[in-house]
Image 1 (tube, rainbow, N blue to C red):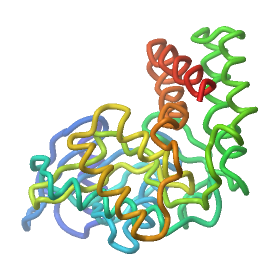
Image 2: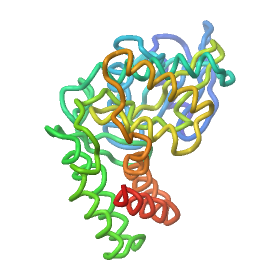
Image 3: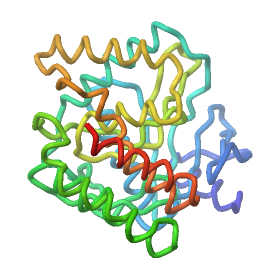
Length: 291
């Protein structure tokens, strides 16, 4: 990573002199400003990544349901956002986060697969490309743009056999019956694993690093489970209560569909990182077919 390029990007988008910066993980730098304050400069994973994340942050923050970092600006390579000082998980923060996430989902989206306003169709989830293309129903969208492309990648690279790939084909064919009751498109974070729930010094749980799009709200809930978000029972309990109070309770069996909604992140991780995730995805697909 070129620190000097990052500092120039900060000065361009913040309009203040950047004093110094240091790497805080991946392609992100924490940059201190000469007049005080700190921001984060992130280099996108590929073309359109900074634009996609900036659009997602703005869309998700529109109503203030869940705190997200403010965007200072972006260009073809760099995104500059507020720095949020880390803190520790807490029960009150977890419950507030669950209620806020329920409200955020219910803000809705124009269609399944719809990108955020101003966001590109060809976006990113971490290091993996992710296409956001509008569909009228969730099963068609999920099969075409969240399962099939990554199964092809894993099959072409030898991580899945053709016989194993056929298991995912069956899941896709049966998605209308496996998905539960139809729901309207939700406003999704899209990559809500534990590392993107940021427990902050201000006593709140923030969302960071979105892969935002219109989708099924159970997808975000499944992502929270995937790598063990702290205080998850508190989060999900508050979420379910808030959704019910809003007149949109979660559909019966939503916990049993967790593996179905985890297929995309598992397949994406397999395509980027390798075979262990492919085995997990295959197990989740087989479990989904038993539901």
